[in-house]
Image 1 (cartoon, one colour):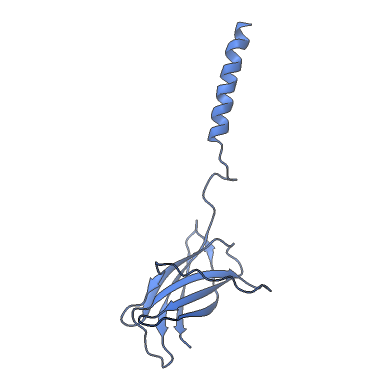
Image 2 (cartoon, rainbow, N blue to C red; image 1 turned 180 degrees about the horizontal axis):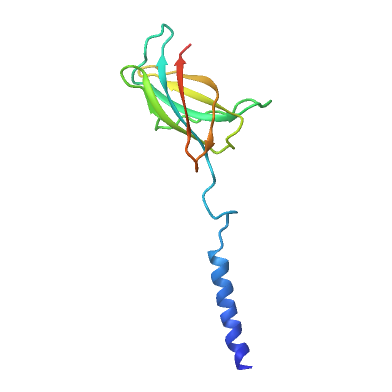
Length: 141
């Protein structure tokens, strides 16, 4: 009888510790992201570099029959072009790494409109491995 009085609270304590320490995710870690490193140059319609433009990147699944979701343009750009139009960005996506197309939204200094460009399919990889990199040239219409 004395043993059951000790075992029940002890068993309850062990179960409470296990229940509270068990992860709620499958692996208990943050969700995996897909990533690609993007380097490139931004050119205007005449082929001249665009300096000081803010670039926002994201990825969408391809192929799809649905229209593209709206691209979020936040206050912080993924990249800003330098004096020769060059930029570098690390682009993340929460979609699986296969079948992703890169999109760019370009906000030029002193211009109110945002230009949206489809870059094309790119080799995203899981962010837990070394990311792939691409070099692109974006030309404004």
